[in-house]
Image 1 (tube, rainbow, N blue to C red):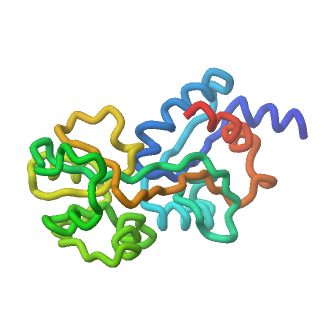
Image 2: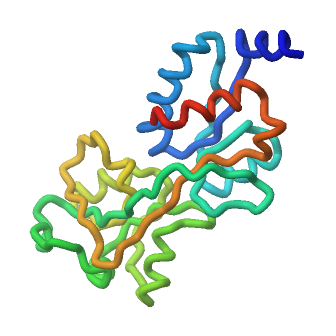
Image 3: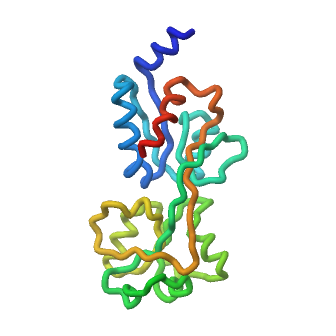
Amino acid sequence: MEIDELNGLQSGLIRIGTFSSVATHWLSNIIKEFQKDYPNIDYELLLGDYTEIEEWILEGRVDCGFLRLPTHPELETIFLEQDKLLAIIPKNHHLADCEKFPVSALCDEPFMLLEKGAKAEVSEIFERCGLTPKVHFTTWDDYAIMSMVESELGISILPQLILKRIPYKIIAKELNVPAYRNIGLALRSKKTASLAVKRFIEYLEYR
C-alpha cells in the first residue's frame, strides 16, 4: 500500500474547482511550489461560481475546490483568508478623495453587479443596509466589471484579491460599512482524499 501511495505521487491528477481571483493570484504560486516536489502531477482547473464549485465537489467532478465559507454542511473545509470587499470607482469620480466610500452612495449611479447564481456577497451588503442599487449590468467576470467602471459606465464592489496587478484605471475604496468574504478550500473528506490531494493541502500556505 505504501508503495502504491508513493507511486501515486509519481503521477496523478488533481482536479480543482476555483473562481477567477484564486486561479489568478493564488493557484500559480501553490502549484509552482508543489511542482518542485511532485513534478509529475497534472492538474485540471474548473472555473465556476460558488454554487457550481460546491456541486462539483459533492458530485466528485473535482477533488477539492476553493469556496466562500460557510458552505455545504457535508463538506470539510479549511479556512484560508478573509478577503475585503471594496468599492470600485472611475479615476475621476467625485468621491475619489473620500476616506471611506459610503455604502448609500452606491445607489446613486448605475451599479455593476458581480454575481451569478446564488450566494453572492455583494447583494448581502445591500440587504444588510436596506438599500437597493440601480443594477445595470450583472456578470461573473471581474475583469469585464473593471473595464466598464474604467469606462465610467457605473461603479461596483469587488473583492480585494482580484484587484492585485490590474491594468485598469480605477480606484478601490474601503466601504464605510466593513464587508468581507471568507475564502476556504472544501473537499468531501480529508480522510478519503487521494495522497496527492492530501499533499496539495500542505502547500496552500504558499499562496
